[in-house]
Image: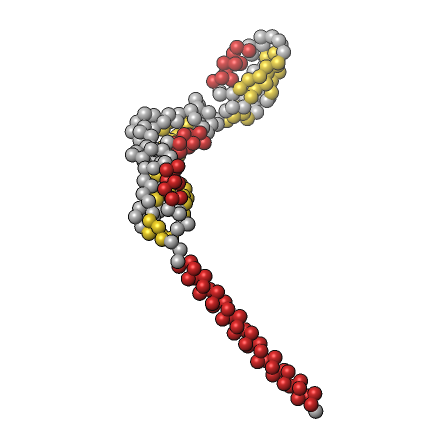
Length: 237
């Protein structure tokens, strides 16, 4: 009988101890959190210096002296601040902050270009890079056929080169020449000079083999469909 009572007593003791341990654990957590908060709240407060117009070395020295550090967030164009110098800071000068805080800054890239660069005959990719380097970008692309400018190169631009800078730059990009379909002529027996003249008029290309002044064979055969830019192969006799 006694062993049964003893087991019941031990079970009750275990049930009582578990909530006590849990309560003690929570209490310790609250005390630790409170102490951490108090320690952090006693961090030294410092004044943010003015970084406007200063270079990175000067700015870093000023911030380090006040227990702060520099964080570069990006760049922007400005006509008054030298390139590489501080243009803006996220926390205004004179404000109080906790030490060991990062001050975010924007660097100057210098003034924007004063005129539009020459883009004609540049590839679209090169043109976009040139404009980006000058703080500009293409606003509109119009694709047109051209018999003189290679495909994917700039045919014309607006505003034109050396004109005043505009935020709305339009470029015409070549699609290459119009593709016109023809029936392939019969070049057999024709002189090479006459064949070349006809091929040039049709905006076709020509390759020859053999020696002679007249055409003996051709490829493609007469009457076959050919289009602008295709190659006619001629064998001479």
